[in-house]
Length: 246
Image (cartoon, rainbow, N blue to C red; front, top):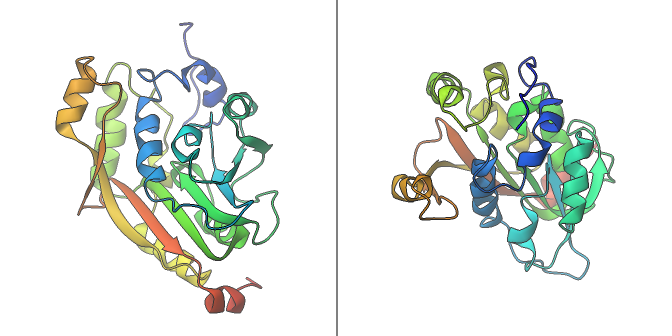
């Protein structure tokens, strides 16, 4: 593989540099495959014909195979054109756009997934507002992201960036890691009561994956939300109406 150019932290152009890695189960984005499966576990079965799932920051479309049997039309929004081309090849309706200003109508989505995107946005409040805006009353919001803690910075930046084959240095900016209280409060302000759960790779399955004995490592839920965490919530009809002008 050709050398990857040096970029500033959190530069979206890094995803163009790494475009060949999206669907390599043992490549740079291997953990994103594991997280996509864990995210899909929180997505309910579609309850109406034509139900829409919006995947914010869809990347190469890694969520698609895990929700294929749930009955949704899958729309993916991402800034990176090279990623969207691959998402479209996996059945995603690919839309180029910013997570803080989604080019989608109010209430168009039955489910919104925001997986491994909130730690990349420079305006968390705007991204949460947009996720909740496009979610219909009664719809489900599913997120996973990285917590704004010293432990997360140590593990994700100091440790992981030194592991050969892991995400390259600079993919994350620790200044953008997510304040959990702020996230929950902003979701509540827009009518979604978000419940958080910690997430980590299973140590045993990770070891077997590293030894080449498993195609993927399993993610398991944990009480601690101090590094990786998931959130799931439902948009309340009354509160969504009350905050519709925000």
